[in-house]
Amino acid sequence: QVQLVESGGGLVQPGGSLRLSCVTSGTIFSLYAMGWYRQAPGKQRELVASISRRGDTNYSDSVKGRFTISRDNARSTVFLQMNTLKPDDTAVYFCNAQFINQELWGRGTLVTVSS
Image 1 (cartoon, rainbow, N blue to C red):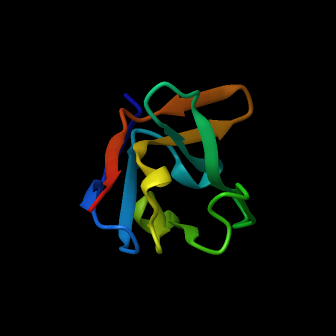
Image 2 (spheres, rainbow, N blue to C red):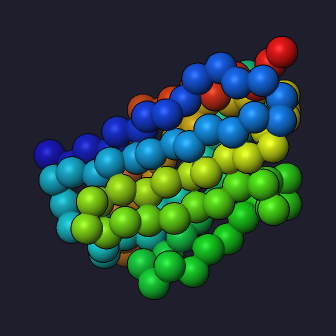
């Protein structure tokens, strides 16, 4: 059974940092393009960052320069380093995996940015 399990969320003050992790099991991680999405209360889920199988990255304009996505194929893990966090970054963050016509989701981890 394929599983994506996120961790690393929590409460942080504005300007602070968090590092999210998503561990994938039950499949060949290196085949998948990986991404991080987020959903704030009352808003649609949106793409935050993605990384291809080759390591090419893409970011939403709202996080560019502050967030960094990376992957470790040996550990079947994708990371999201979040710096200079703002209250608008408050959301549930979801890990996403895509391969051909298959799409997988984690259950999410809550990030709250507040003083």
